[in-house]
Image 1 (cartoon, rainbow, N blue to C red):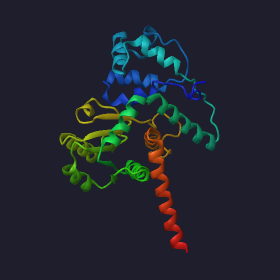
Image 2 (image 1 turned 90 degrees about the vertical axis):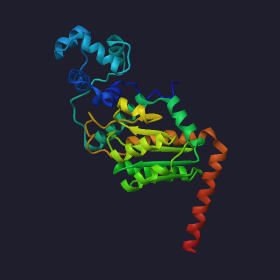
Image 3 (image 1 turned 60 degrees about the vertical axis):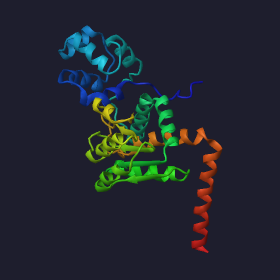
Image 4 (image 1 turned 180 degrees about the vertical axis):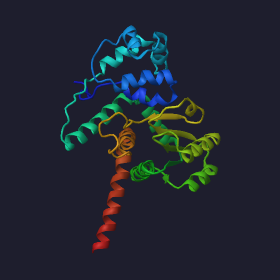
Length: 280
């Protein structure tokens, strides 16, 4: 039985992640596939006539999404396509369905080889810094809280001035994790750029992939976008990041199961002892 049997691979998250790098013609093509709700003839000839673009443009669009050509792209699109119903469920079901869609998007973006590399970077680093602003800052703080409990020397930064000041302390034994869903948070990008220049490993968690990130990011970890979801605007923005951090966390713990879980148990006992002392 497939361990991911409840999830379907979809290329929609890839289109969303690449969206800001598309030309206007490519955005027109992307909008068609992102907004389409019905099964139809997705052949190059039909789609080109439907949205008034050339078949060559469809081919270029497919290649920019990482496929060899339009035929491979549309095959994958149809494989993961789920026809959407116009039926409006009650609010509770809509929220739960939206979270399920975000989980499906996360599964579609999952690159387990990349996750393994990130885990190795954490192991090999003397010090880890996680940074972000707003809801991404909350996720950075949660990352510090989780990994501190298993013995990782990690600090979270949410203040702009601290992010800039911390650049001078990074070196080839540092790991800097920047969190920016938009991929446009300047303080986060500055810390990644300057830290990379000083030899640090740098990881960006984002929903918007850009070619320029390759210039100063050791890894770009794509997280699910809330765009094109029925209730995307009311779902907690840090949720997709926390899901990805949980995946990295469990991989980190399980790769040294006994040692790291022993540290975790020790920290829990220390906290429990503190609480007992307070209430005694």
